[in-house]
Length: 178
Image (tube, rainbow, N blue to C red; front, side):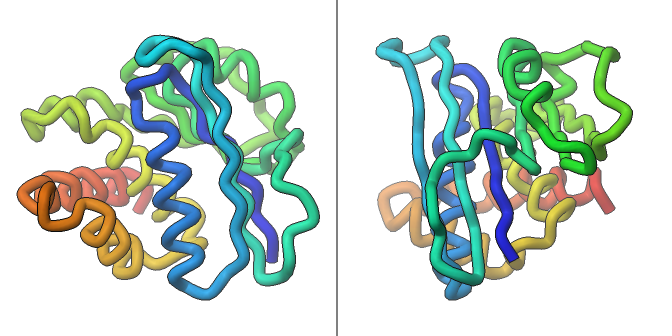
């Protein structure tokens, strides 16, 4: 089994973190992974994306030119990367920022209102965790229990107070897909 992900959006939306958590969770489950970020010089607002490959075997290349799983957190990312997806792929997009209805018919599509859900938790910064929860439920490539353990470790003692809201955001994203 090999799955190729591309997570894309604006800098500051947490797209690189989504990719890191996918990679760390898959590693914790004993899989081979690669994570390759790409971003402009801007701190926030510029284009940011990362390619993640998860496999049961050695990975030949970290490049993802035809992502079978695309996470688009904004409209420019959707427009740029959706045409590169193969038929039968999976697209999760942030329906809070993307109103585009001109989507492909040969892929599975899941609209995730990331920003609205994050706002309902009074923490706009967890929109990426809403998306990660939806992605986990849609792909089942890694378990939610291991994901929570990895997230807890990533937050550490310094940010442990953020665990519960992030856990809630993941759960709300998962609930959208069930």
